[in-house]
Amino acid sequence: MTAANADPAPSKRSMLRILGVTFGIAVTLGNTIGSGIMRTPSQIANRLPSVPLIMLAWALGAVYSLLGAWSLAELGAMIPSSGAYYTVARRAFGDYAGFMVGWTDWIGQCGSGAAAAILAGEYGRDLLPSLSRPILTATVIAAALALMQWRGIRWGSRFQNVTSAITALVFLGLIAAAYLRPHHPPLANALIAAIPSGLPFLFAYVLVIQAVIYTFDGWYGAFYFGDEIKNPGREMPRSMLNGVFLLSAIYLLTNAALFHVLGLAGVARENLPVAALGASIFGEMGNTAVRALMVLALVALTNGSFLCATRVLYAMSKDGWGPHGIARVNRGGTPSLALFLTTFVTMIFLLSGSFNRVIAVTTFFFVARYAMSYLAVFRLRKSEPATPRPYRAWGFPWTSGAAIVGSLAFLAGVVASDARNSLYGFLVLLASYPIYRLARKRVRLA
Image (tube, rainbow, N blue to C red; front, side, top):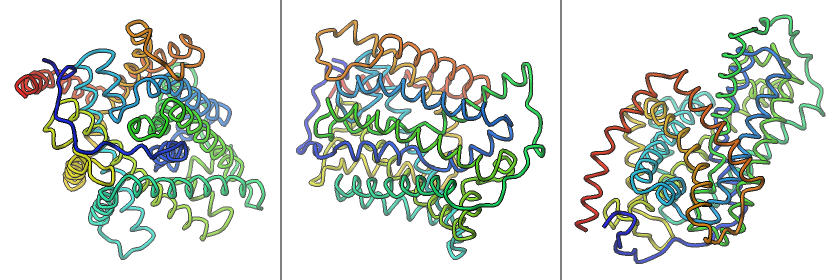
């Protein structure tokens, strides 16, 4: 008997189906908006000094995310599960693919949560010098979020809804103020370097596209809550698609506002151009408000990472890949042991400082799981034609095919730009097979 056919002991309680589209959109924003949009515009402007080309890159990132959302919306409505990528990979490509995707996804989410918490601690120190130990602050943030989520999904989802709503409203208010309030004239573009040409231009643009896609990463947040969304066949697609549309609007309009107020040279000069945008419009108060927003967004991102990671571990344990107790759900609808293990591993990454390496290595896998999930749409259309599909990917097969091509190109770019960590990722893939065999043997004996 394999993991796919195992009949593990059921948990005493099930996940609570109480989440709706509001949470789906909130977790999309909360799982995506972090330090990326605060820093990436400056990095891109230094690498490619052309406003039209930069805006085109952000538009391409939005299109790529939308292509992916159409495909994942079909899978999420067809196979509503907490396992997200893990469940889809196992269903379409078998136990080993599911095992690899699930464990690397869980570890990657723990690493992302640690990174977001430590950044929140560092920016918190800039706001309040008394918070002089960012790691201690990050530890307190992680512990507080875990305690809140342990009380139940209602607490975790409400926190995500509120923090994401504040983040979106502040961004939209900042964008509106950029055009409605007076500000200093932008720096002259003559202060920036010339646009590269030939192969240097191609290489620079590939890196720009990569940076944009990294900044968009997280748009699939609702995918992890298929067991908790009230009507996943209807609300999963609405959550994903509306989340991507709102996220794309915020990113594109934020960049337009940055160039309108700061100019290309000003964006390139600032380490945190969004904070500089706030200062240009509202003075020092605006700078402080944006930095406070960064802390809030990073805490929301940590919360989203905890929620997603916990549900992956829950789904894998429910299928027999871990002790049955990990799949046990408490009265509030939280897999409490899965949450504890997620928090424990996150704390290890946070205190050891190893989360950067974890994220760098698992980047290879998160790009690969993009491609695998889009391939799963084709595979399941062929292998399970009679399975009900409440939502079908718009424009299939062209949209899903384009998403696969984009993912493979992105994967090639990741390997070329970070060969060492991609090699480590490949070695992790090879080393995982013996672990998978041991885990499968355990399932047979269970």
